[in-house]
Image (cartoon, rainbow over all chains, first blue to last red; front, side, top):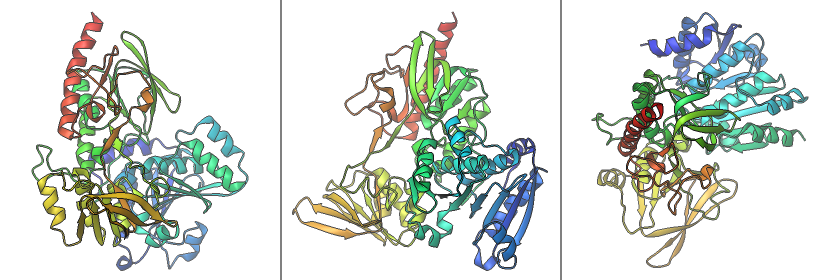
Length: 215
Length: 326
């Protein structure tokens, strides 16, 4: 059975057909017996590619295609790299279901337009002044209505600056990673390992956190 | 189990127009019900919601007493249907935008200011900002928020798979979310201040008969303890005065709600807890300004009641807008 019904396909098509650049969804999977949702994710992105010609899918086995994974900085699966005219550093780890489906679509749009959604002037000018790498992780769960707001901010900032890499991680699918970062509540923003902001934070607060970890 | 639906929000905002007949601040059940009625009446309606539409109802794991769904329905699914119905009639829903100020200008004109410095204008504004989980103001509560302490079991429950958790508060919300947590956690311990639960009987039965639940009634939580993460709660037996420490990895607080009305300053009349006073037609007393749903004084925190408020307000709004035209 299709994951996306006609109504959703219609909405998605309208959004994705408007993108000037084609977006490549580079999917890294594990063998089926090691990955509960890999099949679902593959089906989902295949349906997205069917829905709009502006989306294409490329699938790799994480183990077999280690070099490719490494070139995208991906060390675990299931993982998606969302790549537009260039690789803006947008990643999604896990199944982008429920509320997180909106996050995925927003990420694709941002990459396909090569432009962030709604960033404030002050945020944009700060991002333009960056000169060091920013690893911006957002931990989410699919049932959290506050999470997409946090996740899309990361994606927007990554599209706005080549220094920012935005990884959205479905925390319940990656318990070791969630443990490593002590994720006990979502959304959780982690910037360069040490900067930690709980909840859906205003842009200014994220910018201040980036400043403080880079200082 | 999972589904793929699109929030209007993250990708698309409002139509770009900034003038509306009606702006509803808050996209929970009352706001969406009002939007359904108003938009269907041809009233140009915008709903502004600070996170995703659906309000607290959307973070309720399962709603069993909303008529029309004999098997019950996930809160997020129910709110998704509300939203679709409002959009179908032409209501616009702007998500992830926070209203910071309401400025009554004159009869028939109010300005609504948002956090991203946008200004919308409407002839009529409905406050449907609802309420949010109340804090207990315990030592450790702020410190461990997001570090094992949560106010949203629907959001954070999946992170506590196989762990031992505590739910503070054994009223309706606490037990309802407790049922949800029991499906993830190894054990759920409920701590209630009162000597009994005021929750619906069906919820009491479900949680109390569950093999992995424990109840402490007549106990007061004194402190949330931990190192980097929550490790224990300290509670006092109110009958004996005995203080004990209960080891746990997660604490979920469900001790009632407080209204989201701070941003209003002294614009409208509120009761001592900050809930907005209205007349039976939902008018606040400020020209063109109504309040509906959980944010309204003496309400019951039920989806059905919120829907009723939204309906009454939308009907009164139609009359008001028609009079403005005259």
